[in-house]
Amino acid sequence: TFPGDPGLARNGSATSAVPSLSHLAMNVSSLRLRAFALLGLLAAPLVAQDSPANAPVVIERTHPVSANPRISVRNVSGKGEIVAWDRNEVRGVAEKRARKPEVAARAEIVIEASADRVDIETRFEKSWLWGDKVVVDYVINAPAGARLDVKVGNSGVRSQGITGPANIEAVNGNLDVE
Image (cartoon, rainbow, N blue to C red):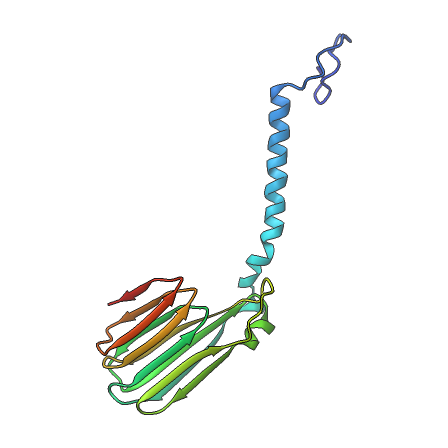
């Protein structure tokens, strides 16, 4: 038969109208290729999260504290890392990420600090729209004797070198205490 025409043989005689297995395999391969191309187009908005227009917003603050302050962290979506250091200061670095810059702008990082206490909280109005998710990751350096009260969601918490008492909760994430 001629390529693409299963009905006529070269000599003009009729052949079976049933396509050959090799013809079917080519059609299946073509459909797979089209499906992957369509998935690539649908996934493009997810990749756009890393574009310069949607670059993370980084906020850094340092506060003087006593040798054993109470550190409270509340974060609905994002990880927390608390690492001991040899200073009587608490340094917090927050990294906000969202697919849309206007969504990241709606997330507010509230810090209240005194010599004996540092409270850090992520606040934003909840949205059930697809793509309106904000993630805030925290890295906090604190005196080793700090007392921790940490609650995070949709991620984990890592604490390293903190010797004071700790109450740590992670929803949908791991706890790693060293």
